[in-house]
Length: 204
Length: 81
Image (cartoon, rainbow over all chains, first blue to last red; front, side):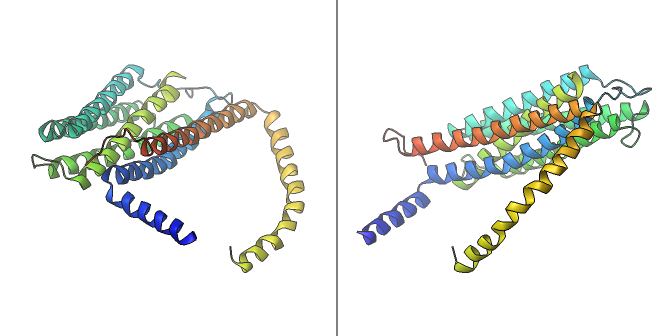
C-alpha cells in the first residue's frame, strides 16, 4: 500500500516536470514569492516615511520646494502605459504572435526609459532648487524612495531589452516564454509600486 | 526532526518564560516615550500601514496558490505547450 502510494507520488512528480503549464505555474509562483520580498522592502521604506511625515514636522521643510505633482503625475501615466504595453506583449506571446511580442517589449522598454529620464529631470530640477538628499529628512526620504524605485525600474528596463534583443525568431521557445511571464510580473510590480509611491510622496 | 534538534528546542523553551518580562518593559518604555511626543501618531499610522500591506501581500499569495491548485485539478483545463 505504502509502496503504491510512493509510486503514485513519484509518477505525479515526473508528470509535473514534463507538463510545461505546470512548470510555468511554478515559475510564476516563485516570482510572486520574490516580489513579496520587494513589496515588503518598499513597505518598510514607506513605513519609515509615514513615521516622519505624520510626526508633526513641517512638511515640506522650511525653505524647501514643493514636489512637482504634475510632472510626477505625467510620469505615472508613462509607467502605466509601459505596463499596458507589457500586457499586450504577453497577450501576443500567448497567441504565438512573435512580432507583436517583440514590438510590445520594445515599446514597454522605451516607455521605461522615458520614465527614468523624466525622473532624472525631476531630480535635477529639485537639486537646483536646493533640495538635496542630505539637506533635510524631507529630501532624504524623497531621494531614498524614488532612488530605490529607479534602481528597480532600471533593472526592469535592462531585462526587457535583453529579452527583446534575444527575441528574433518568429516563434517563442518554451523557456523564454516562462522568462517573459516572470519579467511581465516584475514590470507590473515596478509600475504598481510607483503608483503607491506617487500617492504617498506627492499627494499625502 | 533529529533528536539533537528536538533537545535544543526543549532546552531553549525555558528562555521564553524569562523573555516576555523584558519585552513588555521595552514596549512600555517605547509607548510612553512615543505617546509623550507627536511621533506616536506617525508610528501608529506606520504600524497599521505595514500590517495592512503584510496581510494584503500574504492574502494575495494564498489566493494565487489556491487558484493554481484548483486550476491544476480542473479536468476541463486545456492542455498547454
